[in-house]
Figure 1 (cartoon, helix red, strand yellow):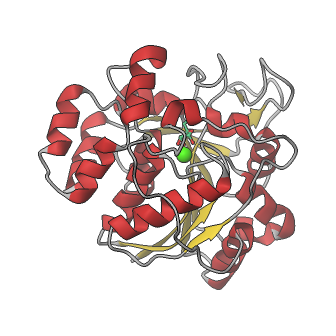
Figure 2: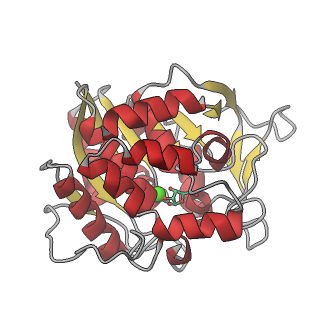
Length: 308
Ligand code: RIB
Ligand code: CA
């Protein structure tokens, strides 16, 4: 069994990624640490607790950072809904998270299981950065760090013309992570819009699976689907966190490059822009494996298996 520790700003695509990990027979999800991002922290905690319950699991959920390290929180409720889960009236309140604070749980879990933990971050990197500032030794004790974030080599932004949301919310945290020495694998929004778009046909195939998790995974995309039609003009809602989770579960189908990656810290329009130094102009040393492709059939094949 591989130990997964998943850091999430639980909204409608995060929840699908959580269902995938909880369903996989070879994966032991040791915990979910929650960070403010798509929705305020408390809502993200409640969404995570609801999702764990829906999956019939008892995996602990820990609250983490309620805001970015050095900026005000800006959520994406216009994208995922006020409650982050499509505003379809789910009872997303009244559940109690486990005792413990996200960054501390990240440090304790990695130190207690050196070389065995895959840390998966599918929200802003605030919890990871706080953990690293407090315990830099975890960088060489964690086995893999898979991050949904950034725009790959030349992808478009989804919150500004050049920045992806997770990297944009807390760019200072991203810089701490990029300089930490952690074994980073970045799955950007470019990969999601290329091969993780839930078209009408894919939606029907997921519905046909007939399980609670499959129907949940479609139902909660109500706001994201609307946003896709109107704003990103995709052929349906895309699944960035689920395809990043697919890479964490099985990286073999992926195409990737080990590149020198930095992040723009300043104000908009450059805030949160991922900077890839292909030719060493900035003398940057390669510090991250950037996934440039994850095949659509491999992703949806795994998704259907795990939701089914
Ligand atoms: O840019 C996409 C990312 O931002 C996903 O993780 C989504 O859940 C939001 O957090
Ligand atoms: Ca997310």
